[in-house]
Length: 140
Image 1 (cartoon, rainbow, N blue to C red):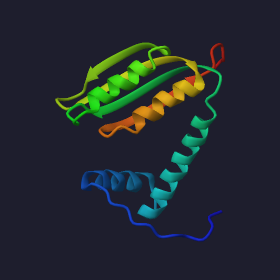
Image 2 (spheres, helix red, strand yellow):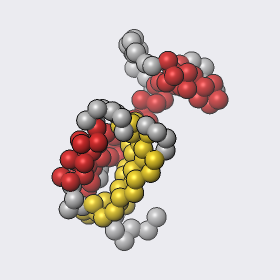
Image 3 (cartoon, rainbow, N blue to C red):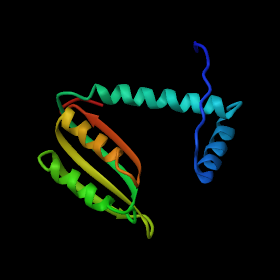
Image 4 (cartoon, rainbow, N blue to C red):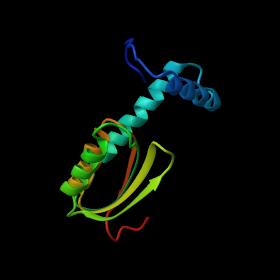
């Protein structure tokens, strides 16, 4: 159950707001606020799940980014080289002239796997990052 409500202001690019409005309509939300609350809850759940990534892990880190973003490629390479000890493989795909996707297969200490994802998430020009991990030998 929600506590007292607080009002906030959020600035969004028009295309992002239009896409969000399409989604909340398709999903049947009664308002933007309801959709935003649900999205924030999902973000918090994902954060909590990520916080628990400990011990030996194998992970898939997928990301999309704008390769024309000034300095981004250099920053991505720096992060990937910082974590070469846990990087097992990587795949690079050109989605469009400006957009790329990378998939990294990581294996090692969960804190390092998570640290790699968090460092990449914080880079300007990275549009989407998703980390999925399992413990080696864990049945899914």
